[in-house]
Amino acid sequence: MINVAELELLQSALARLAEGYEQMPDFTPDFDVDKVTDVIGRVAERMHDNYPYYHPLYAGQMLKPPHAIARIAYAMSLWVNPNNHALDGGKASSALEKECVVELGQMFGWDKPLGHLTGGGTMANLEALWIAGRLRPGKRIIASEQAHYTHKRISEVLGLPFSPIQVDYDGRLKLDHIEDLLAVDDVGTIVATLGNTGLGAVDPLPEILVLAKKYGVRVHADAAYGGYFGLANTLHDHTRAAYDSLTDVDSIVIDPHKHGLQPYGCGCVLFRDADVGHFYKHDSPFTYFSSAELHLGEISLECSRPGASAVALWATQQLYPLQKGGEFAAWLDRSLTAARDFHQSLAASPMYQPLMPPELDIVVYFPTAADAITASKRSREVFAHAAQHHLHLAMIELPVDLVRHYVPDLTANADTLTCLRSVLMKPEHADWLASIINILESYEP
Ligand SMILES: *Cc1c(COP(=O)(O)O)cnc(C)c1O
Image (tube, rainbow, N blue to C red; front, side, top):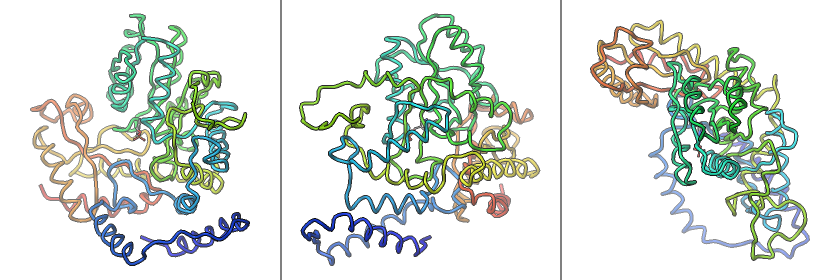
């Protein structure tokens, strides 16, 4: 689990950090080592009750361990603990954040976006839809039924009407239903999800942009999960087309703490038009914004934010630049391949029924059964059986009609079906597929 080189690197990084403060009179905060030893040991034990997220046999929810570089950089920066609200609180780390945001923008073909890191995808989407509401006051937000539930809730917070858009059997929103909604003339913003959380489906962005233009509405891309996949080399044509047209949306959300190798607390919102910055204007009573240079707190709804997140992300992007054909991109391709191979193995197995071929790296499947109720029961049994064999999966509840599209023989004696869901987001998942399948096939109904 722990590579000792990482701890040695942290120690030498801290020594380098301390060199920058050698001019200060010596001061090292003290603490009671014995007391801390006792408590920290108990904390470590309490942590046993987590699933082993770092391990490739954790093939359930969207959880990917931070890369060592991110962990070291994050931990190292805690000795300074910068706050990226204002430059007074985090001068160096604010500069790193601005550079990270430029690189993230460039990945989407944007030269001068306005953007910053956030606590996560929820906050980032909140800011994007807040700006959407300022530009289209009172107008409706629409997003796919498979979009993250946060959009409906954020719309409530912002006091904006919200409608779900129906999805096709592949989990992508239905264009004719968008057009029905647009015809009513109260829609302000369409949310397109590039990689929805449940199924990993990518909404048809080029066609959405055409409709948006025709009706004069904004397009926000929620790419919290899937944002990085535009770097991959093995996307199917329609998925590629969606990523290539991200340049034309109004705002984008991407979560470096999902596929970007970062610890939690790292989302990002980007606006194509930097002018929207004026909506953030506030009159701080503090003499806090002490220079004419941009303080990130002037363009962010959150005030205090961890400089550590920016430090970790910057280090990671140095080591793994966001480039097509690079090492980071190759890892994304490995995840795509792992998901496709896993889907094929399940399709070849008499014991399991996979649903749609994965568009990204999420595979949904269930144990073969004659009817929906039995299939759901077996999914829950497989979930428990696999966990006993140290394979950790996730479950998703899907409309039975969607499932029957892929398995027409299934008797629909319930409205929904509990399926198994595996997010194969670690590059190492590809090497562990045989073990995963073995454990799945050792289940006996
Ligand atoms: C994860 C996710 C969110 C929510 O982001 P958090 O980082 O969990 O706050 C929103 N949209 C999509 C598509 C996501 O995958």
